[in-house]
Image (cartoon, rainbow, N blue to C red; front, top):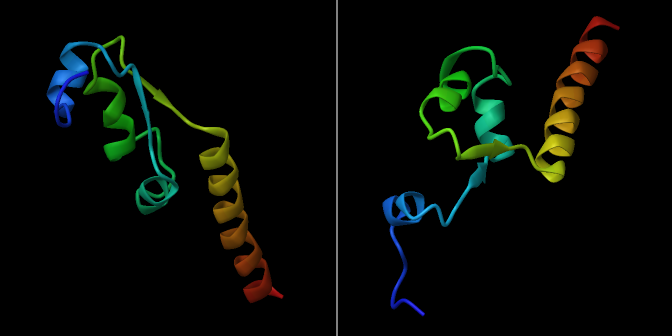
Length: 78
């Protein structure tokens, strides 16, 4: 067992980590826009074997957050 904590660089170079997930707050702060900007750029800043995964929990949270915005907009219109 290695001593201490490995660095992110070491984990990536050794391919010990093959994916990461993005927190709901990060997705929300970038306006849910995966087709442009920082969220879009993630796909081009990673090795091909390193994947971005949207977990079920994050997917549910994003859907709920987006629905909150829609619900609030509907109440303003009514």
